[in-house]
Length: 349
Image (tube, rainbow, N blue to C red; front, side):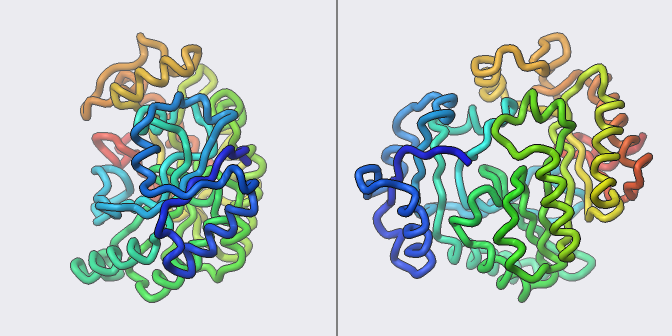
């Protein structure tokens, strides 16, 4: 768990019971002199530049209300199939430090912003569900974890029961909780729902050590996944981003075997495979912050179909196909696998 320096509470966040509970949970972590009330988090969070790597020893938390758009349509190939998908914004930034993370070029600060107006988010979901009238054969998906980990601080934010209650009443709407965390304590207090999927991002041990700083170990994540499976929670798997190494086949064969030691690959509702990718702005920040990262080899990266930097096409196809074949060889269902944020999301080789 990260060490936090200051707690900044936006006026108005305690106007409802849930907001009051969140504030009280966080106040227990701070001494009185490090708790501040502020008018508007945006006056501080996005108004002053704070170096990304300061998150290692100087990370603040804002408790605030999200203004403006609460849900956004996902890009094409964000998930498998031609399904209507939205992501919702419950937080900004992450307590972990992955050297390929796009957030380092997205915000001016690495500080954590936690939004407490979950009821408003759920109201927007309700409107979208009524608009599209999803069915069993044509569901709608909502994704958490686009700008922050879905579970890492859930024991403090405690919004999961609100979402489980909502999705219990909407069986043809699905919720995905994307995470690298092993913090499943709040999930285990709830009854599993078929339409709430917890999806874990995994990499081989060597890649976690080299790139996923401050994240739970592979063993911890696998143990968390197994605990959820034993309770009947549906799971998804993200092998994303895959970072190339000469030992790619061996690394992902071993990873698949380690996963199957805990649960079969056919258990997952879906498996996504994707390569490391950056916008130009993020690419420049990554080079500044992590100049020795293995994936920054200039000869292997190029601007691709959507203007993001990815591995050159021959290498990209090799990476995707190698991981895809490793999944199939270890029991994954072919129809459950898709390529994330690629021109062709359905594997064809």
